[in-house]
Structure formats: structure tokens, C-alpha cells
Length: 350
Image 1: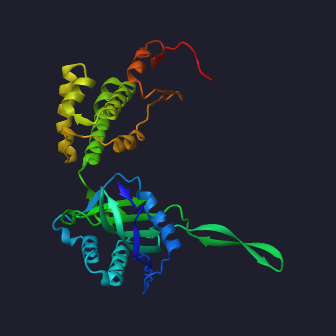
Image 2: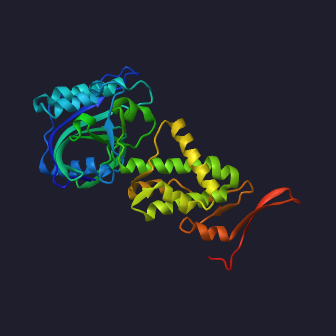
Image 3: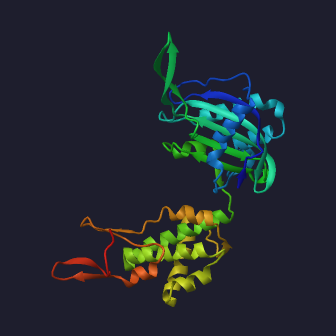
């Protein structure tokens, strides 16, 4: 989705953001950074690696008027008035500072950059990057004096992983641009994405796929697990994910026909969909192009594991749920007064 193979850093400035709650002021830089070719290459890799596989796309928004979103106004000016980069970067710094209303929010360097020749969805454009560095780590530095080697402990920043970052990409201006965001320190999930950026999902095929999986998971918990048990819930989820994996386009009527044998179950499924949409104030699309990246991402959160209160766990194969159901039975033992699972097999594996 993001191609930074030809990208250039046109401007870069580094400020230090304080903490409003603790009354620690910002440290403001008055000059842009000098970035040579070698440093530029390393910085581009540092900035863009977290976004190279980014599949969740957002846009800046405001509930009443997009122009009232602070970052939208700053980006709009930066994309048009290069000469004001220094002043606008300070405004971005102050805007972030105003969001630090909790003492746990860390201070750190704020790096603001203007990039040219970024490729997003096969379009060449420019972008604004905002990156906050919060964590420090110790490293050893070897010294040499009087023919002897020594060692010191210094403090620095890892070049492998940014703490917080966003890219505001200069396309779809009237729709809040396109924004990619990363936050590896989720101590305050509101602070970066909802207060500083103020973004919401772009309703593309990734969004529709993700939203549908969330709906299916909710149905599996509220209906399947409650009525039929954990084993049936896992089987239903695995069948659903396999359907999404095997198809290019989604059709909800085809899905319901393949997954549910009984017409009553299909009706129950569609009734729950209406209830889910109303309660969540969202729309689950009946047809859409399936995003396999979204399916892969969502699969990681689905566990095919039955945990029992007797400290026994049963792991089911997610690739073949139909076979699982053939070799596992559930019942109730009246003598013990306990539920049980019966598992059939031919041999054990080491």
C-alpha cells in the first residue's frame, strides 16, 4: 500500500514535547535539521518500516466541520505553504502538548517531516510525518585511552521501532486526507489517535471485511456459544474465516447458505445482524470485496481453544472444522453431575 522506495525528506525538524499536566514546558527548535544522504536513508527506513504493511487506513475528521480539526488545518497549510514549515511545526507541537492531560503521558522528541515522492495506492504524492519518541534504552560504548579499552553506559533511542507515528498523505483532501497511524505504547489509547489526530476509519474493503468479522465474532459469542457451547462456536468461527479466505468477493446470502444448513439458523443470523447494526450504530455490508490482509489480521485474535475448569484444554484444528466435529462429542454424566467432552482418535503424536 505504501511504497517509499523513491521518497525524499524535504524538511525535518525536531522539537521536544513536555507534559501539560506536570507543567513541564516544550523545548522548541528554531532551525531545521541538516539531513545528509546516509542519515536520510536510515531515517526513511526508521520512519516507514512500521507503515510498509499498514492496512488500516484512517482519515482526519471533525463531528461538525473538518476545518475545525487542528491537524487537518496544519496539514492543509503545510501542503500549500512550504515557507511556514517552522511555524506550523511549532503549532503541531503545542497541539500535542495540550493533549497531555494525564501525568503518565511521557515527554519525548517530536520529529516532524515533509516527504516528497511517496507512493500510496499507486499515486505519487507528498506527505507529512509526525513521530514521537518516548522510550530510551541503555547501550554500551567502548572507549580507548592509553592503549587500554574501557566501557561506558550511554543512553539512546532504538533505531528499530518508533513509539508513535502518523503519516498524513496528500490525497483525498476534502475527505480528511488519508492517514496511517502507529502507537506502540498504548498506555493511553485516547491520547494519540482520538485526541491528537482525531481520525476515523476509511470505509474501504479492508474496513468492511474487518467489520464483518467483528459482527461474526459477536454472533458466535452471543448466540452460538450460549445455545450450543464453545466447541460449536469455534467450529462456526473457523468455517466463517475459511469462507472469507477462499473467496475474493463476499455475498451474505451465499455465506448464510453455505454455513447454516437449517433455514431457522439463517433467519436467526439475519435477525441478529439487524440487532447488531442498531446497537453498534454501524452497517454490516451484504457484499464487498474481501481484504485478505484484514482476514489474516483478524485470524490472529481467534483462538481455537476450549478451556475447562478442570485445568484441561482442548485445541481444535482451525483449518478443518468439519472433521473436528466428527471426532468430538459433548454430553452430561449424571453420576458425576458434570459435563464432558469425548474425543475419538486412532493414535497419539509425540
